[in-house]
Image 1 (cartoon, helix red, strand yellow):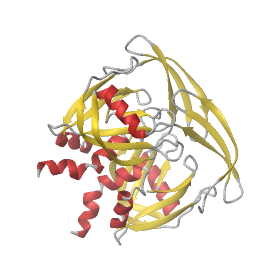
Image 2 (cartoon, rainbow over the protein chains, first blue to last red):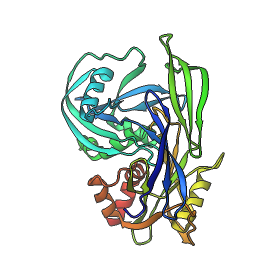
Image 3 (tube, one colour):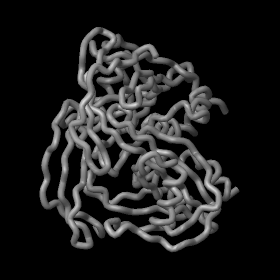
Length: 181
Length: 181
């Protein structure tokens, strides 16, 4: 790599429940030392679920950083060393009450590469069994089924802002809108 | 809001150069108290720049959280209370050496709403003057012009992973590919 930075020293400033904050002293190309502030996160997985009625399953939940309720596709954090596919299958059962029979990998995103090492793995399913949902007792959210075209209208109107949800919607756009041709 | 959480107490655990870490004790719907770990970030702005030769301007830079060089559209962090449009105009001058004559708002994303309050504002320009770039002395990056179709191939191959860049590419897809019809 042309511009890699050598780490001179590294310290954890905080080790919490969902993230760690690390500060590295690094050596730049010009010989200078600077601090880099890094959020360590175990990663996450999210899924676009297409129902037989051509609807998409969303969850609406309160997100404390924004103090807003926002629309997202179902998702969850990886447990330590967990395969992302296992994470999303568990989360779909818990949050939405479905058990995918087939799940397709759509890609992955780096949500904000300047300061977090999180990777969000993206999936698609339209082939699943209904199941009983089992939210954690501290988890509060509604699930909604939104028709495909209405979901794209919401995106157009700026009412869907979550990055993983937008990327999944747009990466699957041709396939989803192809249902109406 | 149905599921809002009342903040009982709030403390800063770290106040750094590009982010702050805050921990809030909140009251859940079920009467329980839990901690929320929140990254405060001033926000950012990014831009898709379309050249007269139907190329897109990317920057390639080392991102320490991933210890990788990645491809992104030009972007920068907001300064305190700054209008995002002012941020992106400044960053385009510094990083890429162009001065937009017209810039269009494309939307905004919440990169990872579980723990960061960052908002990334998205823009498009194809109408600009060339200028002289003036990178900060601690900033190391290459700018590249990539033909539109090649950029979509890179996305398809999983070689573009940055969320703001993917959302901009896909939100502008019809307009970009419309150039070849």
